[in-house]
Length: 273
Figure 1 (cartoon, one colour):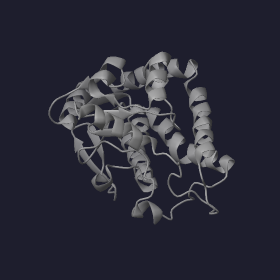
Figure 2 (figure 1 turned 45 degrees about the vertical axis):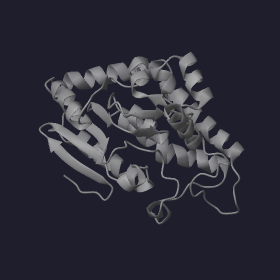
Figure 3 (figure 1 turned 120 degrees about the horizontal axis):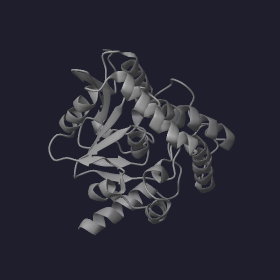
């Protein structure tokens, strides 16, 4: 197996486990991390011995979303940063965020997200690109209008409006009831995901691929790709409308005057105090 700076890889029989390893930053998704996930996912998919891929994380949190300015992110000189102009930002967002998620959704190999703790904004986008999701009781999900806007494909339109209008987190039990996650497990979430993966891996790979492609095609015929492309534009336009950008030629993190993630988490914490 290949080695990475921001991922930990392991194998359990026919299962490849890809763990995001930025615990210090609650596994925030740096551009480097996303490049490494892309490489690791494609490598696992091309390996005939791998029957199921599990995407998980080190530490207690699955992912707090996109990296909005850690030192590693600021010092990453590989590839262009998000440009300041709206048209350039839309293309950049598609290439660096949306397109990789679409690519992982379409892998022939079945995928499982093993989640715990924070799964916020871009964290939910990442989890929702996987075929199945296993969560712990500690998991809290904060969906949003994103570059990979899948919430209406998991819950009803009315429920999606309720969650997004209120900018609130979805706790594990509600996520299970709504179909955002497949199982909630006590104990080690990777062990539970591995148990599920081994059951899947017992199926012939050809049938798994056919089942996955057929089910994905149901969504595609219903307009999944079109809705994702439209939401990518709307997400960038809404951000643009709220931004207070400087005179630089690139965007380094979020310039939103209000931190919607912090607002949602504060409301969640107040509810449980």
